[in-house]
Structure formats: structure tokens, C-alpha cells
Image: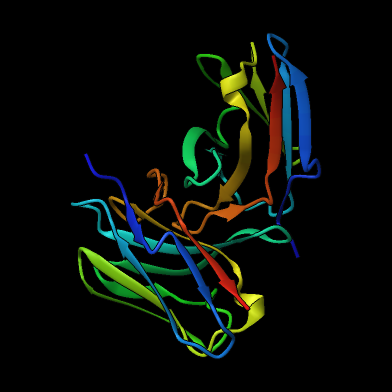
Length: 115
Length: 111
């Protein structure tokens, strides 16, 4: 079975450029999460979708960050304009149900470097 | 303010010995706790969990202990194997989708 798929795996860009990260959740899962991992803060939840609807975006750091889920099999996280402090690993995760005590399954992540 | 803390960034253990990874939390509303394991260039994978109604949960070589009065949980790996070398994240939630993760502990099991 395919797990959570993320693309690209690595992204290097220059400050001010737009960055788009992509995620395909596990088929049949109806909850999707975007996380950011940094050394200082660990894994932080950025946004949570349930049935393609954004439920909690309180973790999105600034207006430069936006996320969409146009259908059950695709989500994007966009940073515009990007800044060096956005450099991190971004993970997408999905789960069946509302995500209470259901296991969240993570993708391999996108390593972003903003120069 | 970090609600879930893993104060040891790294730990080295000899193969065959016990590995003990620790995690502290501050929010008394947390009632579900998890450990995830992460290899380089991969996403975190679920390892083991425990509900606040229990104080111990065991799965093969992995046991998680929960001390609610101390707001502390630990993961024991016995015996440790070189394949256990990874970063381990603890996480907590208050019954919702929102997992609060720690910063991780890098375990190195020496052959």
C-alpha cells in the first residue's frame, strides 16, 4: 500500500521566491495535517484538515503561509514570499477519523532550504 | 512555551542493554501519549502509545511508562539493537487531533 506521498523531497530556493509543497494522503483517510520540524521546536502542527475543510490553522506562522485541500487526495502548502527562517523539514500526515487516538501516518517530508 | 519536553538531545547505549528515553509534560489535560521513531530521510512512524488510564503499556521490546503525578513518561527498549538507532519523539494530546511533540532524542545503539 502506498503511504503518504510528498513532493518535492528537497527544495532549495532564494529568499522572496514562492514555494509550493505537495501531499497525497493515504487513500481513505479523511484527516490531513501539515507539520514543520526544526531543531529548536521539534514537530509543530501548522494546519489540520478534516474532509478537505481547514479546521485548525492556528499553527500557520504568518500570512505568507497558506494551505489548500481541493480534494480528498491532494493538498498543498505554499509559502510566498519565502524567507531563510522558513528553512525546515515539512511533513504531511494523514489519518482515518478525526485524529483523536488514531495513528497519524507521516510522509517522508520535504527538506526546504531558503537562501 | 514547550508543553512537551525531551531534555536529552542524544543518548548512546551498548547493544543488548536497556535504552531509557524520557519525556516530561506540563499540561494536566493531556490524556493520550505516543512515541514516534524517525530514521534519517524518512517521516516519523508510530511506535507505541498509552492512555492516561494506564501506567504501563508493553509491545515486544518496547514499554512505555506513565507517571501522571510527576507528568513524566518514559520509553524502555530492552534489549537495544543497532536497528533501534533513530530519533525518538514523544507526543501528547488531550483527546483531540492536536498532538504536541517534543524536540526528539537521538538514540545511538553501539554494536
